[in-house]
Length: 174
Image 1 (cartoon, rainbow, N blue to C red):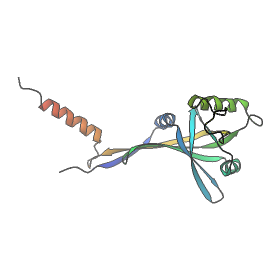
Image 2 (cartoon, helix red, strand yellow):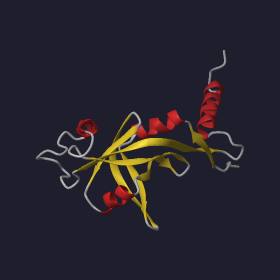
Image 3 (cartoon, one colour):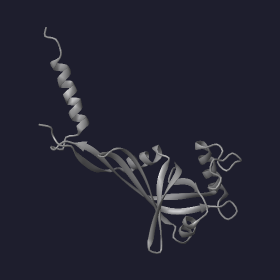
Image 4 (tube, rainbow, N blue to C red):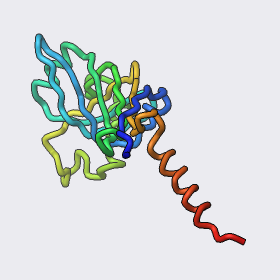
């Protein structure tokens, strides 16, 4: 009789959460204004305690100028019960070289150009996204789901054990 598969969900350590954040390049920025929460996909890069990205001018920037506290989420979904998710809580900073830190702006541009060399150049594939920003990672948490059987044993461990048993039973008698 087949055993049912169930998820085992656990918290990720800060190191595991940061590793997930560093492995991906698209996440979701969540922010609020008045009584509404918005979530938008964003391309990003991570450097230390900062998430760097770019966006277009619009209501998001107006909202974040008044309420800079935001959340940022990234996922790695491999299946219904096989995924990781990290959530950052932090503060949004619009980067403007004329009214802020030139160093932070230059750092953001340098990092973004590692993923797309034409960022903010003539051949920029998304020239409308000319506003650079960074989010300070004030807090990061994460969760992971893995498949288990009804006894809570991990599916990978079960498959590995079954493979070992099959190989030992298939060994020729001497």
